[in-house]
Length: 560
Image (cartoon, rainbow, N blue to C red; front, side, top):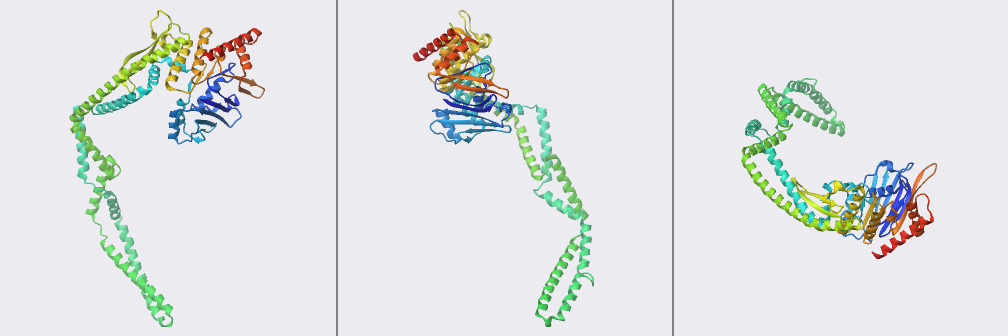
């Protein structure tokens, strides 16, 4: 159950802290007092988008915090998967909203919005004012039916979805391969030309880099020879060369070597330099001799590079990519060459998976029809409890023109609310007040099936009054015997049934407007009921009526 709601700096709420109780919690207040903001804050805490303009004016951030206590094994499993500490069934969800970001936490551990949304449905079910309109779309009827029987339906539904994905994949392959004979032959001829062109080139990995280096060397051979010859002249070819100068220096050292041992060491070092220079000059001379411009080699290198670069422009910017393109082209060629056989195999595979899909869809339809019978009976009983006299409720099945991941079924809720009238699609005949009660009936049935611990209803009383309102209040009280119910209402009949009654009030001054909420005592609850009954003027008769209403509600609750 939802134990506590704490909201700070959100819209009209400066700060409020609400301790909810088990069974039936009722929230009342004047229109515009901030009731919808409270419901919106719960939705936001559980993952709904939070507009930045919801932060209270003048504040840097807003905070919403929910405290739950649950014994749900599903929740425990999810918490274990998320690796979030979870003790004594307590879960604390908080969302802090700033102008730049929203921080989500569960039990003080940061969590993604996706995981928060995954966990939320197992903590509570919230019916907003707009949700009744979902019943007007028959596509949602199938979802409600599947949700009711999900324990049996979900595994088979997953099989159907898997079959359908495989069927779609094969259909896509068939469509891609379904080309005309003329187009097939034309593509094969083109692929054959490309494969031959790449094959005849006889490419070798790294060959282009080697040829680029060779081409650069040959094309600059004259510059290289000029520089090398100049260096050879400087080092060895004349009387003033480096080699001659070093030889002269060595001979000069020999005249004074006997006078100091250090001179001998320096002379040896210079001799080593002379030997190195001689080796360098021999290698440089050999290199100059080998550097002969060969026009034939240059032409062959240039032609080979042109061939490789032309292939790069057509098939890929490297030899590796060109070879990969050829491999892919060969595979495509083989596919086209054996296209008839491949298509035949795909058609056989397609027939096989289509047969399996049809069989699984038939099983899913049969299971849905089986589940629909008790579900319709439960909803009818719930509708009778909500003052639908002589109501008939059925679930009609028809087959869609095409199969989908959901199966072949089109489901429509059929209802008759008046004696002697045939059942018709719910969306054609239900009024706003009837939609509210029908949704309440469905929610109560689903809650029993799913063992949801907390149900929240935002103005489930829309469009109802009188005896019908009384029936709705009694139904809410019955539901609240088994689980926690939190409801916003404008009807005194429903408010009188409250086990805990909360009042939302709005106060204003020259600077700001603030919404506050607090739990009412028994006498304060009577005063609030009197306000709801009597409007602006609360007379003694209205107060007495409110007390009588509270007494009758208490007696009803005691007899449930």
